[in-house]
Image 1: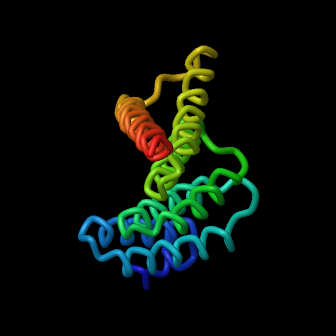
Image 2: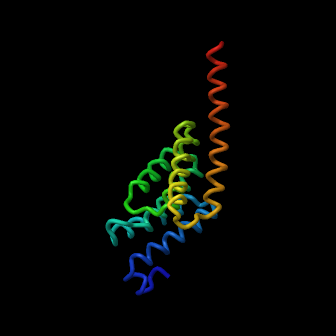
Length: 168
């Protein structure tokens, strides 16, 4: 497929194919191969466009997910931060990246920062809902609610543990 002449002349199409291949390998838990294809997609995306690159942001999001699954939260966090710094993010994508940032921070044991990141995701969605922007997928809102609940419980458990250690 990737040797097709039409694909070779269209870097956006080719990068999309690499992204999809990365997704397939990620679904199969072959994370090193998934990362290989994600990196290939990003190299094509960055060479073919400048400025607003939603394909690159989506690819970085997927890469960060793979790093999280590999328990490499520090790498995931760096990738999510890179994506958040890109221009012209859509509202749902910004909220998803904030949530993913919260998940990376949570995995690192940085619960308060994780809670802040998840709250920022909610603020992004709330602001745009108030501005009567289009509705966002329920799975995004549900994932945020679940993550916030888990983080809140763990943050309180950590504070309780810290308080009991101080009493000893």
